[in-house]
Length: 164
Image (tube, rainbow, N blue to C red; front, side, top):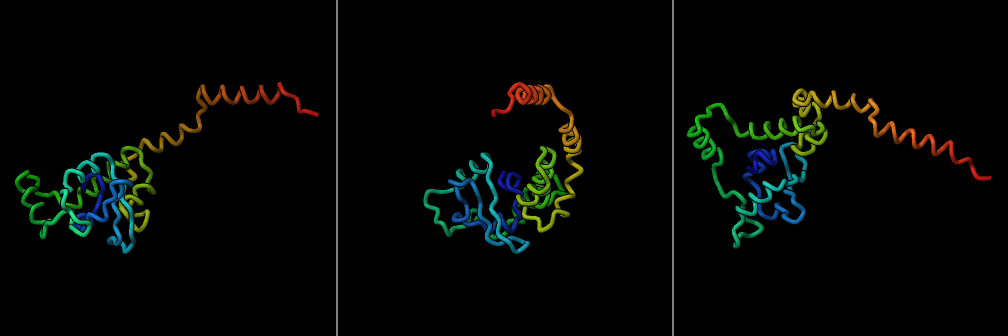
């Protein structure tokens, strides 16, 4: 749930300390990522609940959220039991980006959320949101509301002569 809801890399998720999880701000602070920069990852309600469920009352800020020494081991075992042989951890990250693109999130937003160094890396997901292009050009078509608002503004401007 956390991997699919945050797009964090395996190394980011499994090196995470409780001090980096800010329940008040609903953010995860990653001080150093693969691209060498820090980033804050917002938590949606599902991710927030998952963290709350994981946190034990006696957890210290310096404790790892996931005290597992070999995360690939459990993941590969679970993947094999689920009979999904070609699924990799990074596919969780890809799923995160893909779903955001299909929901209409902008590429710059996706880039910031996953911490891609360049927009060209994030642009791989652009084809998943073809309706975005159609929505953009529809902005040029006046709707009944915008037309009525323009008419009202025009009438108001004509009806009230300037004060002398």
